[in-house]
Length: 290
Image (tube, rainbow, N blue to C red; front, side, top):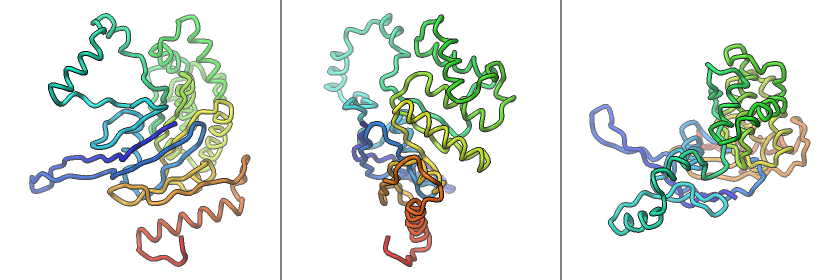
């Protein structure tokens, strides 16, 4: 289970006049996301969705608040006082330089992240990309290629093992990114606009393939998207964020049974409510009660 407790993120900035100002990207966000669910973050551009996703991943620290995964804090705050420093040293006193070198690549949480720009290594083949990831995770050499081929097959990239990313289509590159994420056996996959760079038909095919993989693995997926159709079709719940500073504006459970039809009238009803919310936040007009 993922728990975000009163998360805020403040960025200091210098304006065009050289005066120090600040930007609050995320403000007092508290969320609980159960295991095995697909949850989408939706909202206006610049509302802090991607920032919050990176905080959940531990890629950046919140200014205020805490994130816990299965009861374990994602990022421990650095010691700020002598008392905290003494406690920190006492906690980690058993770690020698050798022990630190052995544990430096050990992941604290089973999280994989997938970005919009594929985030694959262009100088490595499809097979090499996954083998390298498995190497970083400490998988024995003799097992790496077998596992890499297994996960390429899961995303239907058999026959493309020796192709470089420049030789793959956009959809294939994103399949490769998904295969690399799955190969390390994560419990949580965080996705930041993963299908935004591909055409509509490819996007729908990738969405269906993602659902198949999710059903096979039972991972928790958190998806940042601007696409209302995508969010409603994929998600168990949609969390709608307000304009900057980002805070939770509304939550939409999607209880339509799977497998879903994109034309399902119940899905259309949820889409309409979300579009009305977008319209209300942009124009401050509302035709119906949301």
